[in-house]
Length: 309
Image 1 (spheres, rainbow, N blue to C red):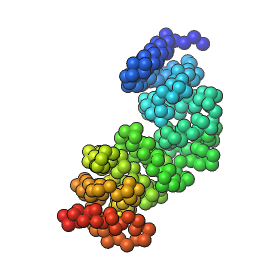
Image 2 (image 1 turned 120 degrees about the horizontal axis):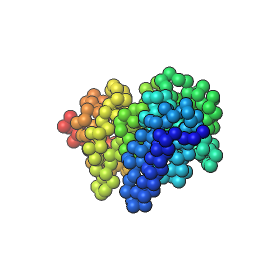
Image 3 (image 1 turned 90 degrees about the vertical axis):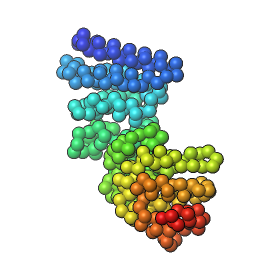
Image 4 (image 1 turned 135 degrees about the horizontal axis):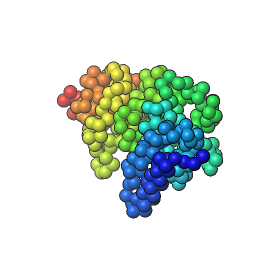
């Protein structure tokens, strides 16, 4: 079937933006905003063309896939961007399934699955609300995106270190707080979201991202201001705040207790209403044997803070 003039224009548009991407990359400038805009305009036409051109999603996938094969753009960023106009239509998975299929042919399912999981992607981000992930995965034969155990996100508890790495990746990508919220909701179940593991991993990751690694180490308060809402959402109550302080103590200990670093964090977190007064006093008086490593030195480093408090 011959492509309609409208679709020829759409394909030409994508090719133009593809050329723009290559040209800007060669010049060292970022072409992504323009490239994504070109894709938005194109994929919005795709639904209208689907009746006349049944393989329209495959055609689009063939144009997008080379960028991933050449490692030009992270998978997570690309998938989330190109599906923005498709999610309200319920067509996000139509395009993603075609892209994944092409990638599997060139890289193999195991590699593609690893890239999917490293990007922190979840089918819940792209499916209609209430649609069952397990059923979708089985029907579309994309179990490789779930790992060797083929468990849906949220069913397998994430260990602290695994969770910390995922959160660290999100923050390094300069993800918005809402994007982090979305990832947590998509990948953790209610029990995991309410766990101390999440609180500790989040506190560790946010605080580490706020450290200015110059001698002497300092805290970038602006980072904590931006991430305050992220922490406040999950540090709900004194016990969760106490767990967060334990995590902060452990982080400072791993850094060999740099002078004044813990005091700067305490000041900033009090000022930003991340941790409240009662939790600080609970941390000060805590005798929990599991949290005593470095506690003595940590206490001495924040004496002035408690005198002020």
